[in-house]
Image (cartoon, rainbow, N blue to C red; front, side):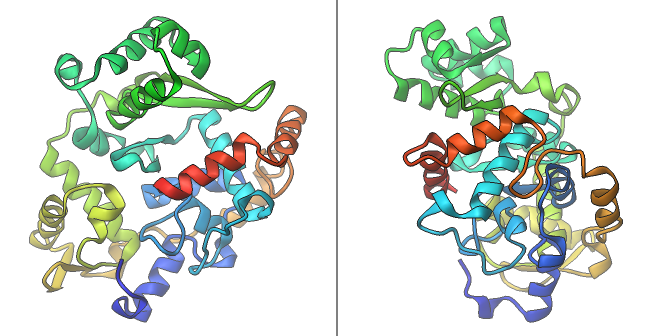
Length: 327
């Protein structure tokens, strides 16, 4: 990761605005979280200031130096991020899954076709590229459409939980399966479903890989203002060579300049992300009845679940720690 000195001050300020790294645009409700994902195009869930790119956790904190604490159990910002993540998954208006290198990522619907072109798997290639366990899980979900983790393991006849976990991670990385809800009572589990059921139009679009990489580079550069060597690859999971080709395509069309080898900068700040418009008014007028306000929920069942998450040794704590390790 580049040192802070590698990023000019004006670029850091551009990122503060684009990635909600300031208190005036901190994300506090699920509606605001959806607008954040749509605005930035794609974002990590629980990465912090030590990793580049937009992050829901950093947007909740509203500051550029946000770092996940060691004791996540009692941290209100981590708790709110986790609650918003669960609500985003349940509402299903943005894509959420573990993609390349096991990174948990949100994707705006407009960006799904481009990620699908890079990471997606066509049905004709499933037999040759998916493991036997992954194919067994996929077969069950295509028959049942939605199922909890434990039931899925039983129906797919997998002998142990790690085998199921690896199979589900494999299907998520291929953009075939997504979590549809996190359930905490009577015990923690995810419900899983087919991604095409939630985003059929976006996942059925056909985009050439080169064009998809270029648009992913464009989306990141719009928010970043400037990319340093290896930054786009680290955020998206692309190889550095392919990320470089995407950035150079932006230079060729006049969207960016290349002031130094591996460094790309917006040629005009006006090409960046749209301004924050009317978000405060929308939150005041329409957000009061939405779930996801800081520390509160209008759903009694969800309130009970939040309390259960705070107990020592809860699944919530263990899963946050896993996300801290894998980004």
